[in-house]
Length: 100
Image (cartoon, rainbow, N blue to C red; front, side):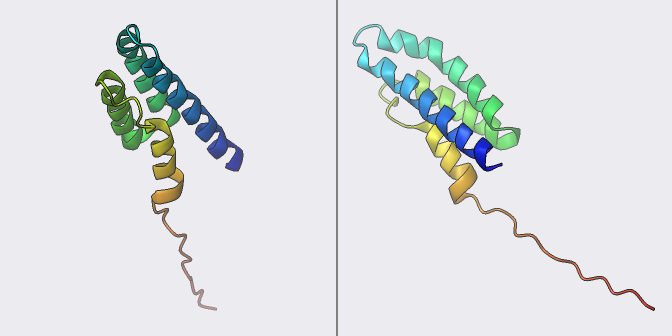
């Protein structure tokens, strides 16, 4: 589980860097964002399953398609939400008494 968690972090940082790299190309960069936005959304939904992954994929699509928002590290923020900020349910023990 721990290896999978950090694999997601490495992938997320890589995708964030790719998304930010388009900002460095003066004229062609915005057009590359149009191509990158659906790819990034698909990757996000594959990395994070369920409703949270769907919401994050919409957010990363919007972040990549809108101008001047490439600086936001959406994949890394999603990883932080999933593994640092989100409260995990605490395991509870249920005691069962058996009549003897």
